[in-house]
Each structure stands twice: as C-alpha cells, then as structure tokens.
Length: 359
Image (tube, rainbow, N blue to C red; front, top):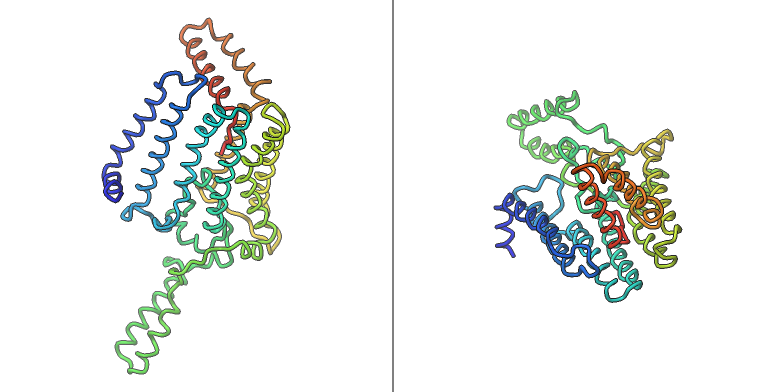
C-alpha cells in the first residue's frame, strides 16, 4: 500500500488524467438507462471510490499538507463519506432489482450510516460547518490560520481581535522587550540568568496548544446563536435520512416527503441566516463565515434546484416543461437534436434514480 501511495503522489497529473478518461468512458457503456444497470453502476461506483482514495492519498502527503490540515493518522471521514455517496446509487439499483419497493430499507440504512459519520466529523472538527457534506476539510487558510485559534465553530471568540500582530504597536513593543531581555541576560548575574528563562515563555503567544471546542463550550459562550448554528447543521446532516423515512411511509409519489424535506432545508438555512445577522445582544456574538463557508452556503442554495427533479414535482411540472421545450425546438437544426438528447438524458436519469438525496 505504501508503494501505491508513493506512486500516486509522484504522478498526480497522470493519475488525474486516467481518472478523467475512465469517468468519460463510463458514458459509453451499453444500455446506460436500461432496466438493469447493475454492471455499469458497479463500474461507476468503483471508479468513484478509487478517485476518492487517490485524492485522499494526495491530500495527506506529508510534504504537501497545509498547516491545520487533518492528521493523516486520524479517521478518514472525507474518504468514508465519498465512498458512501458513490455506493448509494449502486445500492438503490441493486435493491430495486432484487427487492422492488423494499429498496427504501437499504437506502435508509445507507443514509443512516452517512448521518453517523457526518455527525462524528461535525463533533471532531469542533462543530465547524461541513463543506461538501464533509468531503472537504474545513480548515483556515493563509492569514486565517492565526485567527482560527480564537474561533469556535465559526464564531469569533473572546480575545479574537487582541492577538499579537508583529506589525502592530503591541507586537513591536514585545519584540523590543524581548531583545532587551536577551541583552540583559548576557551581562547580568547568575541569579538573573536563572529567573529569565522562567519568565520568557510568558511573553510568547500560546500558539502550540489549541483546544478543540466542545458543544458545552459553544452553548455556554455563544448562547442562542451557538445552539441555532449547531441545530442548523444537524438539520442539514439529517435531512436526507428524514426524507427517506417519509418516502418509506407515504411513497415516492406523495407530496408529504417532498414538502417535509424542503421545510427542513428552509428551517436549517434560516438558522444559519439568523446567526449571521444577529449579534446585537452583548452575550451573543455574530457568526462570521470564512470564504470556503460562504461558498458552501451558495452550494447549498443551488441544491434546492434538485427539488425540481424530485417526485412528485418532476412528474407534475418539470417533465411537462422539458417535453414542451423539446417540441418547441425540435424543428431547429442542430439545436433541436441537441435539446432532445439533453431532455432524454435528464428524464432517463430521473426515471432510473427516483431518489436524489442532494447532499
């Protein structure tokens, strides 16, 4: 395994090219949208897992890991989540082929495992926002690395604006005092020499020890905002499982699972919006998103478009609009043919995969 890791890290560009080629060739597999696609989906899932494994190997390379990145010896949460997402469609296809409507039991088990892994990652990361469902580590980059020592789950903690900047007045003063102490130690008596090493560490900022925030710490220091942020993330994590449970109860053609899933998404996003806009109360501090967390918020908004592709909305409205567009553009040379192929792919994919978790 170590030999394979070394080869992947030395040939990153070559590995990425092979992965792109292999993923492109999967579209040439015969009968992509036939009644039985276990073979093609198995190939696609296998390639997805291999790709996720290679990315994990590259990201955990000792010489290329950025400060603050995940310890390669820790549990690979991102890799595990990526593998589960790649296996999810295969589980649905196999379960439907052999068990019919009972496939939802197997999908529910898969989603339950994903929820447990994501909740464990959410806790181990110090209750930071999950990026891409936990597949991407949420670490501060660049100048944010220093300030991240004062952050608790995305909140700016007490003292966050009082760090010793070497270019600030306080930083220059401490630097001057430090140089003065060094010069005094070279000329003073042995008693002073014995005292200075004990006092010197006090003047150094405590950057080596970073305590991971706990849920109790967030709730006690951040009050309602901290609770709403944590609850919003938990709703985002558990929403796919809630969706599956209601589908098992009412069926895929019922509006109840669709509305409940959409409501959970709106409530969770509403909590995040509230904690970013609040902060008027002295005890509750405003929530500040990093650049990567802002991108994640935008990504989650885009995921709402999947509700147009989920039953029963798709069968009632989206499919009719797609077919109407196809008929309208059919007489147009080239554009009509291209539109027909796209509509065929969309309808075929949605018909084949009735369940789309969107996370």
